[in-house]
Length: 364
Ligand SMILES: NC(=O)c1ccc[n+]([C@@H]2O[C@H](COP(=O)([O-])OP(=O)(O)OC[C@H]3O[C@@H](n4cnc5c(N)ncnc54)[C@H](O)[C@@H]3O)[C@@H](O)[C@H]2O)c1
Image (cartoon, rainbow, N blue to C red; front, top):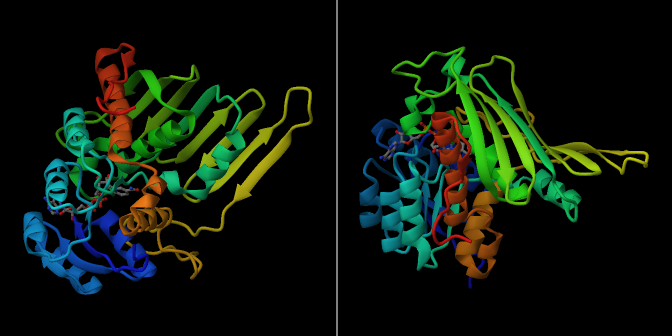
């Protein structure tokens, strides 16, 4: 297997996340961006000119026309997932699919079934799993029972509407739960294990439901883990004062995790011991801004947008050498289980009852 082989890469969707991947790929070097596709022809042309690729507005043509396509990055909003993945399977092209991995639970199940008997290398964009702080957090929690998980993801895009596209604010197209909170829930699953049941409430005290805002502006969610642990999460898309934290508690440990920038902070020690404080920062530079600007504090030796960089590097290494595919931290089947958790949360808000997290057939 040629570890240096250049891979021809196509990118479908040329917005925010595509720009992050493209900048990371330029930093990584050694591959070719051969096609960039967006419904917005001007955007596709501009990005294609920047990265030396061919511009497309129809993703199906990318599969038809590009020779020796080695990987495809699906960077569109969640409305476009299954048809591209189907084509990738048909043409045997490894794919990296952005989160959320599907626009409905049904679609997630269908894609899991499509992939089940293939060995196609693929990855889902839960990049936060690759943050060095996640590795360190898991190392410190190794051998300890996690009893409680507590998180708050409080941000303001519902107030500022500064994210551009409408789908961030519309439940039927994704909404805040499926856009940003999905990362926190996925990292919680990755570290603390599967969640069996949820009970959630939603409210719209700050931003009333309207045609352009069909999601809850805030949520409170209780989690019951398969391990017996319990957790609670507060979410808001409607508070000008930000709070973003995630903490794991065990008998003798409290550990707070940040993935971007990577950092952990906490205390460890049994009740009869003098507790030891833990504070660790990691050298990775800050992430890129939404409009594609690279953070001014980034060190030149750091990739433009960690931990998306680590995610894409692992994906490309697995294409060159499939024996490295176990380093991919989120395959579709696992990502579908995070999706199922989000659907259980939505179901609980609608029913007012505790909801079991639906099983995804064909996953462990
Ligand atoms: N992993 C992460 O940290 C992360 C970060 C940001 C966004 N995302 C995800 O990436 C996806 C895209 O988000 P974004 O912020 O880049 O959105 P965006 O609106 O900036 O860009 C999406 C682009 O896709 C294009 N598009 C839509 N339908 C298309 C189609 N059928 N064919 C070709 N192009 C099409 C749009 O014209 C737009 O330019 C979302 O699912 C989002 O949740 C992931």
